[in-house]
Amino acid sequence: MTMIAFEHVTFRYGRSSILQDFSLQVERGERLVLLGPSGCGKTTILRLVAGFVAPDSGIVSIEGRPVSIDGRIVVPPEKREVGMVFQDLALWPHMSVEENVGFGLKVKNVPKKERNRRIEEILRLVGLERFGKKRPSDLSGGERQRVALARALVLEPKILLMDEPLSSLDRPLAERLAQEIVRLQRKIGFTLLYVTHLEEEAAIIGTRRLSIQKRTSSN
Image (cartoon, rainbow, N blue to C red):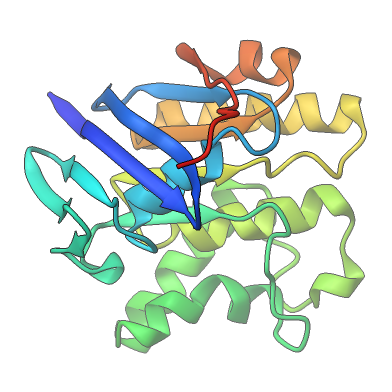
């Protein structure tokens, strides 16, 4: 089944055309890597799926349901069952690991007992069960990456978007975490849309790769 579909999508930023008549299908459970240089539109594709922006024209659909159409967001981000891990991770420094991971559940008014159960389960899954009371500043770069991943996965998204999340790590650690992301995706079964500019990372993570070329024309 097709999980994500772009149909003739155009997106402009100012006078620059970032995506032009762009079409794409991503199947359920697929790990699609968007590969290309900075400024080619990779992050824009993630933002369109998440619902942070709408296409100037065209349709974005999730599970066959249009979520954005011709400049309008039809389904808001919080209704899309989409998780996202940002490049800068965006962890709250004043919160513990448990509080960071559970924040989205708290916002959704998940009962405390269920919230604690899901936090404990996801921390165990990413290998951070002994780190719940620590702050992000107490953790290594790889451990902070796992916290960001746990925070997205605890909401049980159907789709996970990852925007160059390993770019700040040294290569051996980045490769180990890339393998861990693949393990978690196989275990949980979410559809993964992953952005990178590194061929080695794409080779580890993707079941399919799509090269995005930078557009040089302006409208």
